[in-house]
Length: 86
Image 1 (cartoon, rainbow, N blue to C red):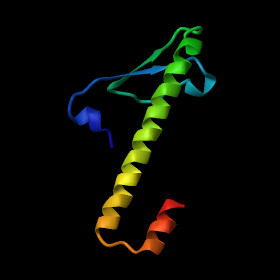
Image 2 (cartoon, one colour):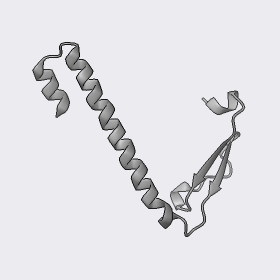
Image 3 (cartoon, rainbow, N blue to C red):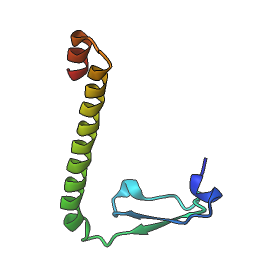
Image 4 (cartoon, rainbow, N blue to C red):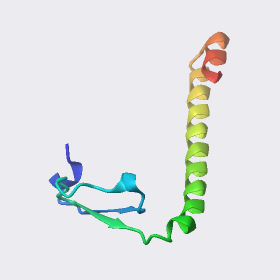
């Protein structure tokens, strides 16, 4: 299902020049335009990736803990809590 096509949205996807990111010309991307970074740009952008990934993991862990706390409020048994935390 192509969500963007139905709403007339256009998407630009930025990729580095890694071989795994090469897209076959026969691929039918109607609302997606691929743009490749310059070859020397990856080394500059990778530290930014690390910060984004770290932030995403921290946010994910926060929501996981909040979900566990909500379950505690819903009278979850202590044995179930220990199993969820491990």
